[in-house]
Length: 190
Image (tube, rainbow, N blue to C red; front, side, top):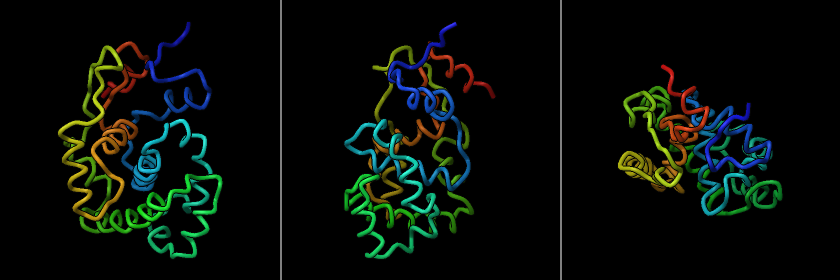
């Protein structure tokens, strides 16, 4: 039997694997939340598929998204990243990742965990949406607006409302699998 998937999920095995195993699965682990936050910022203006193909290179280049290590990246390290053809070599995005690591660590200190902070925007539990068609899925919401505004206030860069909503979808804060997709029902379970 052929599984029905969200319309955005193309036929490439990498995309299918990401859709079937990761996208929309609730994440409460700080390091992985930070990884997705940085990758969503790197994706701005590009396709997510490009980021997926470069994900392992990003992990290697960004110390497996260890915020403590990234917060200490100096200009020499930033220059090395700017010359790394395996990742997105955008100076603003790379320097924002360093600043975001510092802001991330400040939130962890204040809230005990980044997960506790970020999940408070949705009351600690995923929002269960019931979209019939991909065209119904928003690119931002009042929640992602509030999240973006607060993260910016705390020093984050490359963190607009659309990036925040894509982050919320990726880390399972919202279940935006369309109702015909087999993952919608699986992720709706308590």
